[in-house]
Amino acid sequence: MRKHLDWEPEVPATTPSMLASFIRIEKDEKLHTEVNAASQLYYVIRGAGKTITTYEIIEWQKGDLFVLPSTISRVTHKLRKDDPEFGGAALMWVHDAPLFEYLGATATAETFEPAIIQRKAIEDCVNDLRHDVEAHERGRLGIIFGNELTQQTKTVTHSLSAIMTVLPPGTDQTPHRHNAASIAHVVSAAENEEGAPFKVFTRMAKEVDEKGRMVNPVNVEWEAGGMFIIPPGYWHSNHNESSEEAWLFSVQDGGLHTHLRTMDLRTARGEVERLKAGHVRSIVP
Image (cartoon, rainbow, N blue to C red; front, side, top):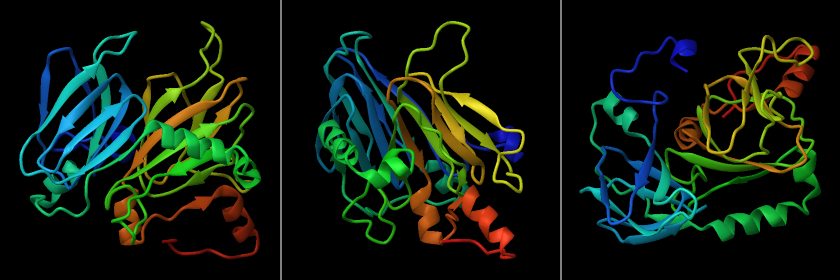
């Protein structure tokens, strides 16, 4: 990411406006987190536990997603149930602290309320999409998470957006791009035979040619538990050449870009058609 953007952050950061970390909680352990951020997002990778905040106590388990606004004091995380395979619990933690460090600002306002989206609700939504013909035509079953208190951006917090993408077997997407950076966690993907090419991957490149094909693309292989970044503005597409579904959870600074009207979501096919017609458009909110 930094290599491609010629970007050297002065503070810990995964992208210019987001920092992603992993939290591991062991048995009988209290783990404390404290950060100058307006939005915090947690995705439970394994195990079950509870998070104690000044707002409320949130109980969570594997596959759940929850968000917190600015917190006046530190947040405490405790284990309730060990993961049967690895022990303890593990969470993906993403927040917008790098943005506040850049601005020299302190996050103090409560701009939304804590919220949890449980695994069952996510799976129910995916099951509904399995019967949606248009979703299959788009080449993915995708859920964009929302929050009742972010009506302007319709994102999970006012600065962060979160998406669960399910790729059916045989998925071969056409390229698209947007200005939001993506931090992606592979929830599940078919296991790969040693030495064989990966069958599930994201292809990305800086540009496309006159036929909408990516120029000098790289393939980022999906492996369960892995994580990768799609830099802002990069053309990318997801592919599943295996016989199993693949699941990907992504966090973007999409709430911020939606508010600024700078998301600029485009498809390669649409761009080619416009250029053939002699049209060049400006940024797309």
